[in-house]
Image (cartoon, rainbow, N blue to C red; front, side):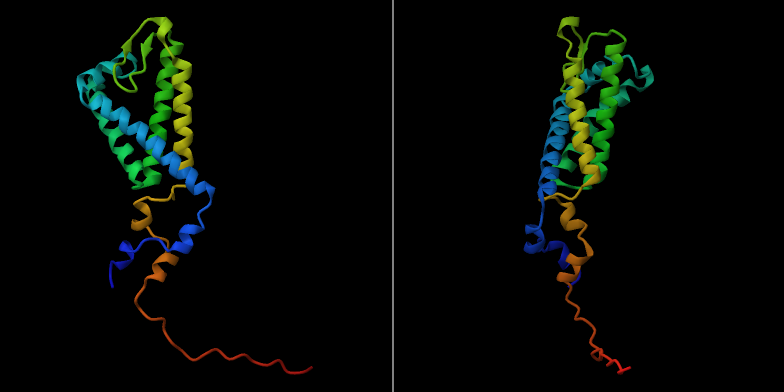
Length: 195
């Protein structure tokens, strides 16, 4: 039956064979996806504030501030949702990892230039008192999130992911294939002649 394989859950024997790395991948997917979704959702309600948060870094040309300020929360939400449901996991993980590297570089840049801002990672960024900056903690958080994204880039297959139904390995497809195996004459063994 065409399309039947997409609806059949993973074979229980194959599912039971998952090792600890698959479960680490699930945790990585949920953490990175959840953080990206929350960060984007907290900014999307006030996109003008998001533009001001981007402007505080003094890295983006004026002409691009609105594009970055409006686009960043939407990108975070899209990547977060994709990771949470396990859709295009490797591509979403690469996107999340790249975002974290950009955030790390941005925070390191303002720290090196002596600017005092809140990163705006979860909204409400902008200039703050120098004593309230948390650059090391923010960089450490983003390094950890980038590591999760890197793990998923290398090992994107995780439990409970839409990818498992959309992109099934060939051996699983064979388990649900309705077409009978071709029959033929059994192979005969040739006896070795005595020397």
